[in-house]
Length: 328
Image (cartoon, rainbow, N blue to C red; front, side, top):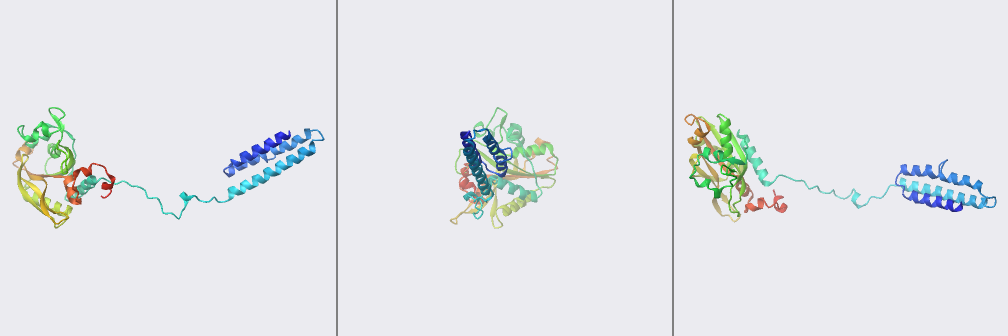
């Protein structure tokens, strides 16, 4: 029985060492030191011993009871004491900076473009990136003999379907479903199998604008382009119209910017094309070309972003190097 007393003491001390909070401590007290606890039960067993063993057993039982009671009080006091904060809880240290994401520089540029044209009263239209030849070529007055329809210059899926090579397809879809007046911009990705280098990529973004109404002239086009360029690049930015040719506009022009590099050298940089909508395009979508006129222009979003931020290689925009992207 004396061995059992020692076992009760060892077991109690082991369980007390595992107590982590006040609830567990109270459970321990009831189990070992309560009125029906194991210590009281141990004391009640002394009466069953032979007379000559009772003094020794009683002395041992009282020692165990005292040790457990003292151990209980010591452990209770340690739980009541505030625990020192570890290094990770030092409230005097500066907070840990959260890494917060942000839109890609191309997404930022598109959002700013839409905001600028939104202030001019333009709506926004979107269209599918997988197109048919009608919307990508035929309705835009691009005949089968035109080099732009060469299979080597497009991503054809089958004989009549391809990844769109220009967002002008959205303009066709808008004119098919909307009667004039029309004032809309169309952003989106386009695809051309260009050789990748510092200024070319097989996938890039365009933003095109379209205005159709009675009495629309080249003056309206020039005014809109002028307001956009001076808003996006600054009031002192010089630009020009350079005569050009596109099957879907007549007359047509290229939009050039005069930009100066860090060394102070200036040169004209092409930003996109524009012109008055060709009457054949109106006829293809069912708009009266005798009554309505319109203009359209298309700009490369990557070119705008690169010129705005001084980026010299278009590949930087798709390599996902955070050291580069975090600058914007």
